[in-house]
Length: 440
Image (cartoon, rainbow, N blue to C red; front, side, top):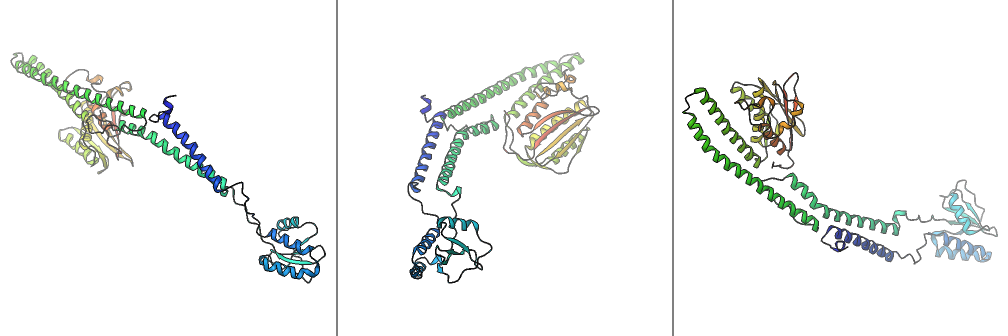
């Protein structure tokens, strides 16, 4: 119950919104009541029927000798009625407004006779008085009733609904705006310290969540920093004994044994360099820029051809997209190196659509089983063919680095079978970046 009246919390703000909405609705209805008093008589919508009926009944009750004078007085007082005493019997018209005649006849009574006049425009009628005298008069149409939406009560109700709806939308936006900032912060989360902390505004519960998320990001950043520093220190400390071991291995007389020892030391050094490179590249990524991805892919294919490898490019000559050029170059290079490690030739294929582009790296190697396709994207996971640590095997970081680069671009990396044998590594990235995403 205490939280219900706490205006700093969500429940208190919702309760306040309900009370304010009800009070606003009552104020609007009261204002409408005062402006359109239902207890006061509304002006009659009659536009002449009442005056016409009264005038005709006066003429019918007056003596015949007084009708001419009385008719002239009525014509001066109500010229719009056009009352005249006819000296001859009128010629009835065939067509007339039956509804109008019926209403006028009902108001005059059975002693009077309504006669539509021939040659008139339908608004001139003859009226037979009880003694047989006939007069003519103009019959004006009734004023139409206001439509339902034009009535004061409906306008008041409509205004109240619109006001309360706008108030509710404003309150809902005020309460949900911090949640949208949480989602945006999660999408742009990075460990480089450039992202601003979440704003701690809104209801008390929202501010508590924002503070908790900011503290969590600080702890994650500190944890990653400590991990990187620790691994960097270990790498630095291991380089010295590895160098000493390499120098001592040079004095081994057995040439084959010395060669195997030196190869093992080179692999240890390479592993340390690869791990540190993976940590550094996952820590910070370059800025997005507009680049010609087709030229980048063609350059990669040419570089491998210069080294004597059989790598071809299939795609458009030019294709512009918003990417991180160096990261894209490294990702595709890693994929081509993997393809050449397990196959004799590779093909780079580029397909560009309106909102995304697809890069396929195809090889003619043994491929990867379906059970291993997903796990191969994780760090330090190598295929069955690379279980043995020889110079042809990597450290299981190429695909994971490429997957991290694809995720940072807002895209995805997937593995597919190639017919009749081989593997297709598919890199699907958006052409236009909505926001820069950094990989933690």
